[in-house]
Image (cartoon, rainbow, N blue to C red):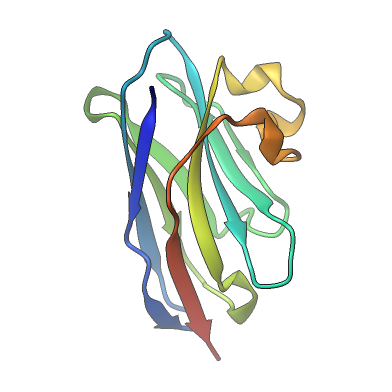
Length: 130
């Protein structure tokens, strides 16, 4: 059973940076698509970025491209989301998610549909003030 635990959420001012971390455990297959989703109050869950375990292939939502960077420490089973040039519209609860198989198996690296992902963390809150 894959378990995911996020950390790093905080309140920051617009233009600032944050780094979210996701600790993964319990892998049972050779490859996973790891992703960050976010959900703001009253809005649908939105895919932000994804990466396959042990690869450098990444996918990003247009809204964060050029500002956010997903990365991983494969040996430590950690996934990170570096968020720069934060905007108030980035305010949301951020979730780490995992799906069996490489991200290339899914359209847009899985970012278009949260139901691709069967494993979720509890989320970490990011608040960006103007």
